[in-house]
Image 1 (cartoon, rainbow, N blue to C red):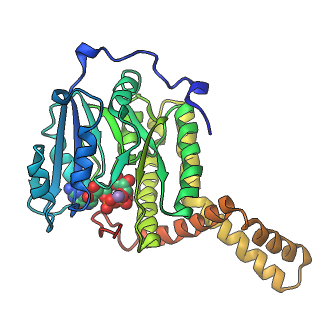
Image 2: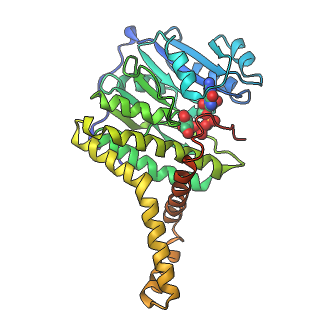
Image 3: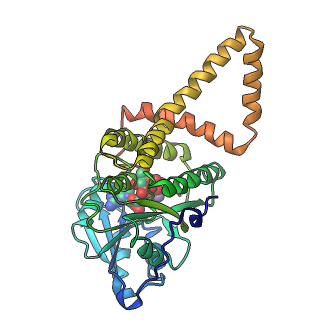
Length: 331
Ligand code: GDD
Ligand code: MN
């Protein structure tokens, strides 16, 4: 894995202990009664001045016990009367934060170390925004996918910025994001792109690690929904290409657009042509198909191929429903 030291993301400055900035931590919730208590307690365990932390739960008309549980834990709770999606809820909360630094974190996620906030605050002296890399514990396809994707995120961050951010941990200096785009499911990634467009770097760092539970049921649907959101994000972000000043970030955007929107179809077309030509008796095509199936023995290649098919399906599904408001999966 790429190390931050190779590309000097790490800020050698330390935090001036008498001068901790106020950090507002926003947790968006919809029916999170199973996770919200542990999530808030987990944040309170962070090694950071408690009176410099403002925890805000923004709930969109949950019909379970989320709000009552949160209220008992002495955090600020904002309640929306209607569910209009995560980005809409974040915008509602963003208008009412006091912190110099804002951290967004999903209720069903956790942070690996107790100095996560501290590290983010130090990174934010140098960068506009920072996100985590992700660990998965309960699903092998997702875990292999994450390993591949973490390397990409870290590499992009070394070059300039990553255009993909994770709602499990997304920190930025207040003022860099006026609002989250409510038309794109990937509110997290679209905000990292917005920060980069403003000429500030948005980086994923390998010493801030977060984890989440993958749904036990409906994994494919969950993955397709997330892929749909990333496709919406890159279809939108590519239109900004002429506004991007950094050459490295320009390339990253084009490559990510290619990875998410074009490459899946190239694989499907190549496989189809090869299959047809094998049926017509072409020995070389037959050999290629055989080699393809052998390559699937590698878990990395297998995962990559599965993702290509899911991306193609997601593109088609996006025409019918963008899932800006989505169903809560069972974890
Ligand atoms: N207030 C509010 N309103 N919160 C919501 C809503 C809503 O309508 N919908 C979901 N949330 C909250 C959830 O309660 C959770 O805390 C967080 O947003 C993420 O939702 P999940 O249902 O856990 O979805 P996910 O883990 O697949 O989300 C991932 O992908 C999304 C884009 O597809 C994360 O990376 C999200 O940050 C990202 O937005
Ligand atoms: Mn989640």
